[in-house]
Length: 366
Image (cartoon, rainbow, N blue to C red; front, side, top):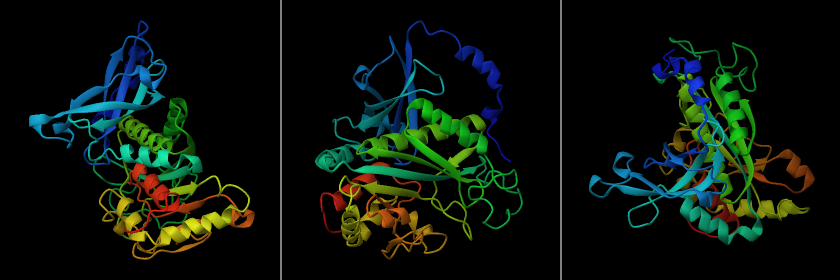
């Protein structure tokens, strides 16, 4: 198993320095999405005291020519603090702050999808849109080989791994449990985790979150995951189909509801939303992965608990449909629905914005 060299450093040596007092000052790590729309970047600065609100954190800047976000001749990009979290790596009073990125002219960078998402959520705020996202990911060695798999060959067929227990069924639980605790410490609204169908594949859930909060919390949870994997010397990939063949892909299922869906008689409103979604299938497929459906086409084949990328479908308790109504919701007559189409590497701002545009703001067309 190929493990990163940095993970082999003696962490107990580092710990003695992390315990040193900071003389009232605070380290603030600015986190942002780079020009790929998938990877995260970060850098840290010192503030004179612990920030209590997001307004206490100043704007900053970075070299966009080194993050695929600008040309070298005009490379300064602005970091606009958007949401603050506790830092589980250097501990209190230090903070992580998720940022929006603006270009030199103060307009949003191309991969700053938070900007329009926030505008959309403001328009729909009276409907109180709630989201829960189920983030699947796969663990790899730095050589790209799935973590825990035989170096020459494959593990046994899928079946014993989903929610599995035992050294021959699950790989990387230490990472998963560290991630869970770190998210709770940070203030991320993580709500659960489980081993997935493919060995070395896992899932965590974030939510319920309202409006723009959903994208903020999922992006920060992803940052924490990648940062923890760095310590362990492995890689978390959000590739929607990391291993070709008879293996499950990785999605980011989106659970969605509005206030009327959550009340008695809400099933009618759920069914109306699904009807609207059926008429905008191409639009949603386009925004549900960063490459406009190209990545998801490897995953949405109609096999391995997916629907076909070409067809829209819906059903109660049907994991092979585009939209699943949970059986409990069908029985109760109210609740939420699950859109199973988003890819693991989707931008949660794009997914939540699209759902609101179609289901709440009644936008049409592809």
